[in-house]
Amino acid sequence: MLVYLIRRTGLALITGLAVLTLVFCVVRILPGKPSHVILGDFASQAAIDALDKRIGLDRPIPVQYLDFMGKAVTGNWGVSMVTDRPVIAEILSVLPWTLELTLAALLIGVATGIPLGVLAALKRNRAADNVIRVVSLVGLSFPAFVSAVLLLLIFAIELGWTPVISAKTGSFKAWAQSLALPAINLGLINAAYITRVTRSAMLEVLHADYIRTARAKGVPWYAVVWRHALGNAMLPIVTVIGLFLGILIGNSVLTEIVFNRPGLGKLIVGALSQRDYTMLQGLMVIYTLLVVAVNVLTDLVYGLVDPRVEIR
Amino acid sequence: MSIEAVAAVRPADRAGRPMDAFRSNKLAALGLLLLASIMALAALAPLISWHDPAIQDVVHKLGRPSLSHIFGTDEFGRDIWARTIFGARVSLMIGFASTALAVLIGSCIGILAGWYGGRLDTFVMQVMDVLLAFPSLILGMIVVAMLGPSVSNIVLAIALTSIPPFARIARAPTIAIKSRDFVDACRSFGFSTPRILLGHVLPNIVAEILVMAALWLANAIRTEASLAFVGLGLKPPIATWGGMIREGFDNILDNPWLALVPGTAVLVVIFALNLLGDGLRDAVDPRLKDAT
Image 1 (spheres, rainbow over the protein chains, first blue to last red):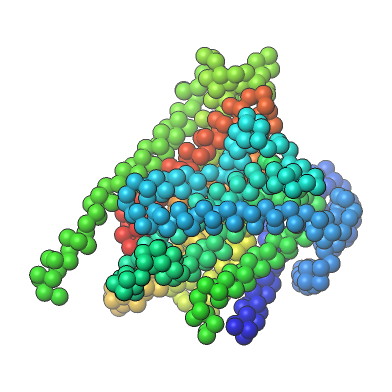
Image 2: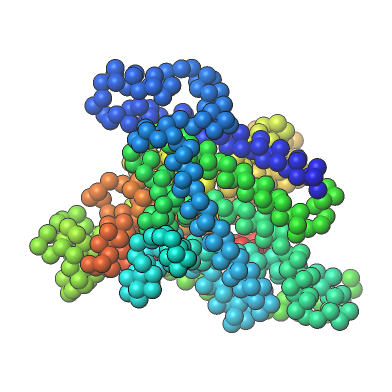
């Protein structure tokens, strides 16, 4: 297990460096220089040159690349061009909000998606299955900001169950209220994806011989379904949950904006609109780290779900 | 297997299949119908709406639905229905263009990587995996912010994030096909590589690519709306669904219709495309029937 872990972590680090390289390339290859974008169309050449010098864009590309990678790895992400505070401090101050939201959404997604997917697979082609399939398709058709606006309109404005503006002020109740709607919004979209993949993974295993054997041996039906079948269906489910992280992160940005919740999403939209170049670079590094961390976590869960993984 | 055994197995095997096919086709047909209706509305927008989507009428701003404005008016007094159907043009155009670009580039990359194999293949597919790992909306936001929000830049940004899946889906069958006898036959006739790839490999994988395209078209339209919602869409006064929802959200206490009408529009288009994509996939590849 240890060897497996070390090797997976090593691979993840390589992926991380590759993603950082990609981020660097995307920013540099694109036409339109950052200084030009920051200063606007009417900026003088001298001003552009000065800004280039300040953010280091006047140096040769390989030097910039090594500098970018070095700083990314050592956590020296510079100072925000708008607030003048260290980028890493700004990011770390809102990171817990985003993590809290994403984890709660993941929990809601797994807790509703897996049982619904199992139910749909067991009731294949019957009414329950049809309803679950159509509802989950509607769920994954929702742009996150549309569902967020809808939830806000119904539960905060019409029914008044939660405050319209999230405020995490001390008490547990206030915290739960501020988290509830954003987490439900992200969680239900997640659940739609998880339901579909659970259903198809369960359908694959339910026809396997060992399921028939287990039933023939007299293993109770619920144990066959939840232990034998779901146990083996978990691998593809975990893979897909890991892959959906990209979508989850994109959706969390939209959700944070609608619910006016602090977090990476609001930070990146602010950085984009204010052309905070250093902040953007820092955010891209943190998103890369998140992607890599989830890759490692997914692998860890593989080890937990599938005993065979240890041997490899 | 004896004939009796085949006969005994077949009916059980097929039980429910015709029903399945019927049901999935019915849903796909519904998807096609919805999509066609919205395309028709978008195409005929100037004929259907009796208001110009950009003309402001501040006296009647934030109006509730009425006979003249069936879904009310926005904060500048512009007709919401007119803006929604004109917004469909933007969404569909950017969606189709970016998906077409991604299909074109992605398939070329996938076919070439699969065909030539070796180091090129390994390298290219690794780049694709890395591109796939980064959250696509974030990448799209960065690209549009760097380039500026014009139609071509938004198309480019969305296409960039959708290339990897097409490269993957084109590569796998290319690898399978290149060792088939008919490809050897083509070679022995002295056909050039481009001729074999375009004339003999491409037709064999085009169905899978098109199914994927339907599903990614849904994604492209969602991304365009999301970009517009965060303020990276086409500049006003052009009506975009994402932009309308954003403006509507700002005035949601005065008139919820502002956000609900374009919100429903974008939901219906994406849902229609997902239905269509699912149905097409079932039709093209029965093996994948239950895969997501």
